[in-house]
Image 1 (cartoon, rainbow, N blue to C red):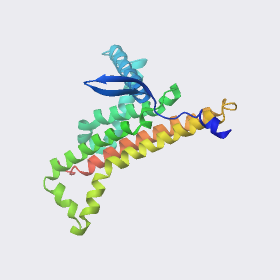
Image 2 (image 1 turned 60 degrees about the vertical axis):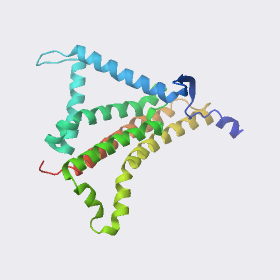
Image 3 (image 1 turned 135 degrees about the horizontal axis):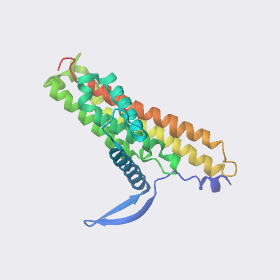
Image 4 (image 1 turned 120 degrees about the horizontal axis):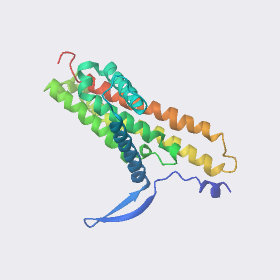
Length: 235
């Protein structure tokens, strides 16, 4: 009986259609659809906000909301990276924050969160890793490599693993937290479908909204901390 009910607990990524691209079979999955919806939604929001911008000292409506979001994100980046570094990275961090937040809470719209797919979170971890190492080499030159042998050369393997592990730890933390909420909610709706009314909304508020916002903040904060660590105080 439990096995039959468990079959209704659907939390997997599904292939929707198969495409032939340059002689290769490419599958369009639920993750691609969710990503497309999130990206198109953000693009439409950005275009609408752009059309509402006015040269006035008294903005109103949607412009107020947009300016509030920008000011909050700008303040977050400045407080973590300093004013000088914030100018360079606020666009990336702001875009990353908004994308992750909307992706994490997209389960409220009936979508399977894109960040519940490791194929989405890992590339984000790789981008952060590239930015970290770019700043490391740019500002520390040969020190980026010699620091791996400090404080004693025998620790080189551990230091190297610590550097390489960064994109994996970032992406797995985000992926694990989002997919766990997705699985739990799917099990609730699959196994307790006859009783799943009203009270699952409380769990959605935690897994989608609260946990989603926390994981977004953690990912962005760690990104800023790791990048800032590689930039000298006087640059």
